[in-house]
Every structure is written in C-alpha cells, then in structure tokens.
Length: 322
Image (cartoon, rainbow, N blue to C red):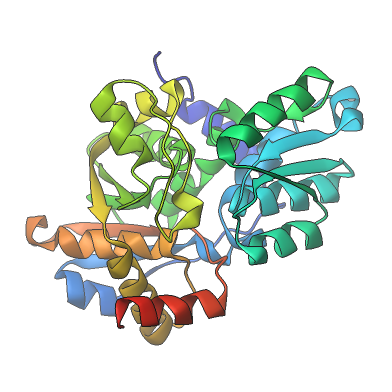
C-alpha cells in the first residue's frame, strides 16, 4: 500500500489537539553539539503529558469518535507509553479504556496505566493481546491501534511540525526512534512535507528490530523482542508503517542496549533530563553517524519518552558495567 497520511492531515490534527497537549521544548544542546561536531537541537518530548508523545495521537483519535463510539468505550494493546496515554486521554474525555498488556510488562507501566484511569487485562503475550482486542472490537468497542491508524499517526506527526517551527533554522538530519513505526511515519510525513531535503534516520535497538526485519522480508514479520527498550518492542510492523519507512527514512540505525543506557545516563547527568532507553537510543545513533555529518549541517534528536523506573536504570548500569 502507499502511505495515506498527508501533511494536511497532520496540520488538521495540530489544530484539533491544540491546548490539550504540551508544546514541548526544542533547544540547542551545547553538550551534544560538542560531541557530534555540528549544531545539534533536541526536541524534549519526554516532558509531554503521560511521559511521551503518545497523547498526541490518542487525543486526535478519541476526539474524532462519535458519541455512540465514546459510550461503548475503547480497547487497546500496549505494554508501555500508548497504554498510559490512551488511559489518560480517555479519562479526560469520559470514555472507558480497556488496556490489554502482555503479562511480562514492566510493573511501573501497569501502575501508571491504572493511575491514568485505564482498566488493565493481562494476556500471555502481545500476539494474544492483539487477538483479544479484535474480539472486544467485534463486540462494539473501538480498537485504538497504537501505531497502525491514520488518526494516531497524524497526531504524532505534530511533533514534526513543532520541531520544524522551533528548531531555529533548517535541519539536515533528524534521528527518531522506531517501535511499530507510527511515530516515525507521522514525524517523517511532517518534516518531509515541509522540507523534502531533510534526511530522517530511524533508530532501533538490537533485540527490537521490528521494522528492519519487515523491510528485509518485504512484509510484516512477527518478532518476540528482547531489548530492554520495552517501548520499542512492537511485535510487528504493518504495511502502512512499512510504506512510510520506505518513503521517508534514509536508513535505520541499530543501537546496542548498552549504548542506549550509556546515553540515558549521559543525558541525565549532563542535560538534567530523564529519558527511557527508547529515547536515549537516538543520541547513541547520532554518535554512531557523526563522521557522516558535514561542516555547517544541523542535526535534531527527538527524545520521545521518559517512562522508566529508577530501579531499572540501576539494574542496567550493573548489567552493562556502566
């Protein structure tokens, strides 16, 4: 299929969700500029409501439901940021939200989802959860897919509009994380729609290579992710998100988990910003590509989320000897 979310769709989403989400900071990072050898801007979406970009797509989707759909409630599959965001947005709009999670999900994410107002049902794994979501949808609930939904993708794309407007000049390279591919699809559509010359680098962690495997196979491939970057652990890409990856991405950079944690610690120490590994991996990816940057170019890193337990960070430090 061809990709079906346009710049106009994203601009309409920006109008719809205005005032309901934060316009997160975009600023020049002196420390990262020094490390990368070129002027480097960060979009700190980790400071968004519910700790990640996900509320953008969720607001855009749920605000578009009919009164009858709102009354029947929504169901979704997520073990991470999407779960928290759907729960928060649904609660704000007076909609029941049922979240199906794999049973090995991080306890922090279960707690944050419930605190945001969602009802949690644990399933054997993500594959089983998606099947269960289809059953609930057949009985009347609206299935809010975390990344294969044009409204979700358009909402996420508003990050790209803000980045382009607030970056203080043209961007040559943008690094963005990939889970199922909806976020990079939306941001890619926005940035490429505004400036076709910008080069977008997708980032995955080793052990969560959902999009890499799908593109190599030429079709969605089910995976069982092993990366500590749990929010990148989508069990499959889709034809829609694959089409976006083919259209917008220069490449996909694979980052070892240890490098993602190392940069998480660096940003926390030097930038005073808490990131989850799924966000910190963009810093590691840019460092891996620094030799390709030309003098005078400008780089942007999208720091997508901050939902991580401090005890996990300490455990990873010990695991990787950091």
